[in-house]
Amino acid sequence: MRRLPIYFLIDVSESMVGEPVQQVEEGLSQIVQALKTDPYAIETVWVSIIVFAGQAKTLVPLQEIINFYPPRFPIGSGTSLSKGMGHLMYELRRNLVKTTMEQKGDWKPIVFLFTDGVPTDDTAAVIAEWKTNWQRTANMVAISFGDEADTQVLRQLTDNVLHFKNTDPSAYKQFFKWVTDSIKTSSEKVESNGTGFDLATIDGDTLSKIDVTKAPAPVSYTDSNYVVLAAKCQNTQRPYLMKYRRNLQPSAFSEMGFSTLEYRLVGAFQVDQHYFELSDETAGPSRISSDELIGSPTCPCCGNQIGFAMCSCGQLHCIGDEQVSTCPWCGRQGTYGIGEGGFDVNRTQG
Image (cartoon, rainbow, N blue to C red; front, side, top):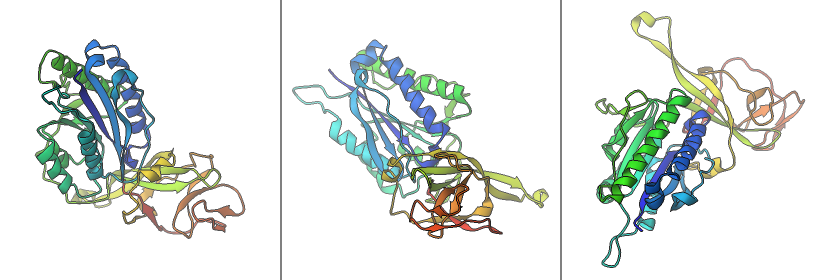
């Protein structure tokens, strides 16, 4: 039986924490449930999930859709598109069955790349490898979640670059229905000796072709659309992330076109130990002044009212009303107070 391999290459960097990654989990569950009722998909579709942040890993190996169960998604630090693409190409080389005199090989694989940010590494080499070895032998659809993704990089990988306006839960449902319909029509095509790649109709409200006419942004290896801070709970030792979204505020000289850059709190979110596994430990620290960060969360792990306290070791953790606090990173004990003025804090790559 010839297979139609479907690969989901999913950005699980810190900017995806919270609602975006939850919606992707639910969306993939909807896709799988729908495909399991489609006779063409059951016969041909095999699915794999690869996630990437600072590192990349196979979350679900390539398997028949009937045996597939959607996993929980981890979160990692950084957006290493080169490692994500490199791992994808490794899996393609390892898993695809080629046509020989004795057998027909797999149909041309389809890759759905989901990302919401800017690569935090140099992608030139991996893009060159993809163009040389895979651009003609695999079909890729790159989807920008929101307005912050680096569409110039995506355009170098594929002509199928789409913008998903992830505005509310209903938009996510429409988007994942489109993905499902695209897989269904592709599986039907291969059964009838078609090309095996046929995207569903794009409605234009939720999903649209990306505008790639804008000039490329300057190279930056830190995603400036968000500030994400990594912390640990003092009581449970569990890691969590504080996510801030970029916001431009009119300044006192707004009539001259000036504005003030700040980052407003989105929320604080628990992550598990996979966060460190998927993070790039070689990336140097980047710092930001606390004056640029608006809002301070409670601890999402234990409920301590202050989730943003910095130890003298430079790491962040939560504190409660205890007399002496213990840093869960270095074990140092001390008392905390509120100082005047801002201070520099380590931010993640985003």
